[in-house]
Image (cartoon, rainbow, N blue to C red; front, side, top):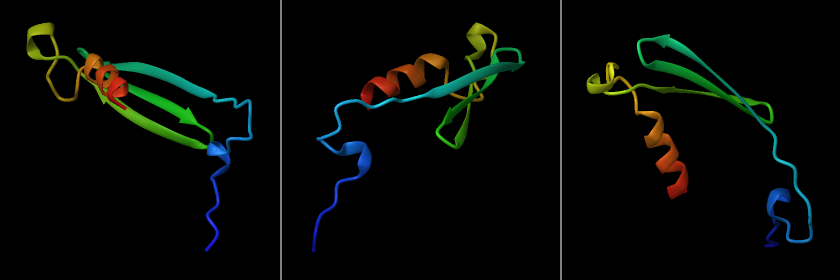
Length: 72
Protein backbone atom coordinates (compact mmCIF):
# COMPACT_ATOMS: atom_id res chain seq x y z
CA UNK A 1 0.00 0.00 0.00
CA UNK A 2 1.42 3.35 -1.06
CA UNK A 3 1.61 6.09 1.56
CA UNK A 4 0.52 9.49 0.25
CA UNK A 5 1.45 12.75 1.91
CA UNK A 6 -1.36 15.29 2.39
CA UNK A 7 -0.78 18.39 0.21
CA UNK A 8 -0.32 20.60 3.29
CA UNK A 9 2.56 18.42 4.51
CA UNK A 10 4.36 17.91 1.20
CA UNK A 11 8.07 18.62 1.93
CA UNK A 12 8.69 19.71 -1.66
CA UNK A 13 6.39 22.73 -1.22
CA UNK A 14 8.53 25.70 -0.21
CA UNK A 15 5.79 28.31 0.30
CA UNK A 16 2.35 28.11 1.90
CA UNK A 17 -0.25 30.77 2.51
CA UNK A 18 -2.56 30.56 5.51
CA UNK A 19 -5.47 32.99 5.68
CA UNK A 20 -7.67 33.23 8.76
CA UNK A 21 -10.44 35.81 9.08
CA UNK A 22 -11.61 36.57 12.61
CA UNK A 23 -14.18 38.78 14.30
CA UNK A 24 -15.71 39.06 17.76
CA UNK A 25 -18.63 40.76 19.45
CA UNK A 26 -19.70 41.40 23.02
CA UNK A 27 -22.86 39.53 24.02
CA UNK A 28 -23.43 40.64 27.62
CA UNK A 29 -21.19 41.64 30.52
CA UNK A 30 -17.79 40.10 29.73
CA UNK A 31 -19.15 37.27 27.50
CA UNK A 32 -17.96 37.40 23.89
CA UNK A 33 -18.59 35.40 20.73
CA UNK A 34 -15.82 35.00 18.20
CA UNK A 35 -15.73 33.56 14.71
CA UNK A 36 -12.71 32.24 12.85
CA UNK A 37 -13.00 31.48 9.14
CA UNK A 38 -10.40 29.01 7.89
CA UNK A 39 -10.78 28.13 4.22
CA UNK A 40 -14.52 27.40 3.86
CA UNK A 41 -15.14 26.56 7.52
CA UNK A 42 -16.39 29.04 10.13
CA UNK A 43 -15.78 28.13 13.77
CA UNK A 44 -17.56 29.85 16.67
CA UNK A 45 -15.99 30.16 20.10
CA UNK A 46 -17.14 31.85 23.29
CA UNK A 47 -15.20 33.39 26.14
CA UNK A 48 -16.12 34.93 29.46
CA UNK A 49 -14.42 36.09 32.62
CA UNK A 50 -14.96 34.96 36.19
CA UNK A 51 -17.28 36.80 38.58
CA UNK A 52 -14.27 38.55 40.14
CA UNK A 53 -13.79 40.38 36.79
CA UNK A 54 -17.46 41.08 36.14
CA UNK A 55 -18.30 37.99 34.08
CA UNK A 56 -20.49 34.94 34.66
CA UNK A 57 -17.76 32.28 34.24
CA UNK A 58 -19.88 30.68 31.48
CA UNK A 59 -16.95 29.95 29.15
CA UNK A 60 -13.15 29.89 29.35
CA UNK A 61 -11.44 33.28 29.67
CA UNK A 62 -9.47 34.58 26.66
CA UNK A 63 -6.15 33.75 28.35
CA UNK A 64 -7.17 30.07 28.54
CA UNK A 65 -7.53 29.94 24.75
CA UNK A 66 -4.15 31.62 24.33
CA UNK A 67 -2.43 29.17 26.70
CA UNK A 68 -4.09 26.20 25.02
CA UNK A 69 -2.90 27.45 21.63
CA UNK A 70 0.65 27.51 22.96
CA UNK A 71 0.26 23.92 24.14
CA UNK A 72 -0.61 22.78 20.63
